[in-house]
Length: 255
Image 1 (spheres, rainbow, N blue to C red):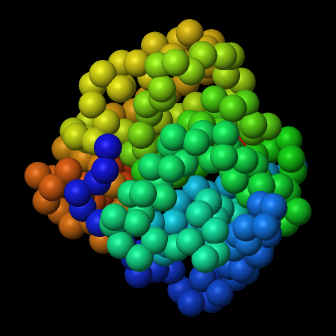
Image 2 (image 1 turned 180 degrees about the vertical axis):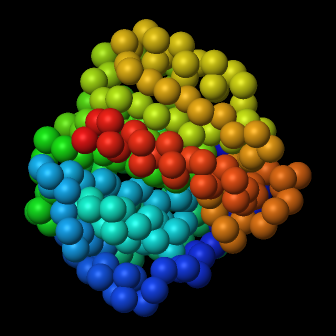
């Protein structure tokens, strides 16, 4: 379902020095040039764990870069994936919806772009056996698809992401641990979609968790989304803080 609220890039609250540590990395999917951002931790954790960040429907934005920088401060190698391509950045909500919609329908291509970004994270220095994929909104959908595709990751985390899949797709075993951080009042993820997702998780034998945040709708971690829940997408400071804590606890558990 398309969002009615356009979520634009946020202004980073981090210091310039933290932001400057992010390095642009060009890589390719056949002839398509992709351009993500990588960052190494100043003090790495044991076993060099890594986190792949999948951006929301506008592609790489301030929010995804901020998350990567915060993860590096915690000791994780981090890489922000470019799903659309260097010359395919959406200019408005209509283009963002079209781009995201394409990859939601062409799941194999979405999973391939995620895998290419995982390869870059490993090149950066992350241990290939100690990786988690996380994402926001459209990126949260991608994180779930990384689990469905059984990409080689230890866990996936979806922040206010879409959970649906075509009914004709087979349900296979899911090896990665799954954490879904969900707005309890998110109108873009209907109850039927949630119910079907939970049934899928049980059928797949996944180790999964789903946390609901009260008074929260879609995009509750995006500080630029406003505060009007009636629009369907809005920032919720408490849910943002609580979900980040849950995410950090998950990383400690699986990595």
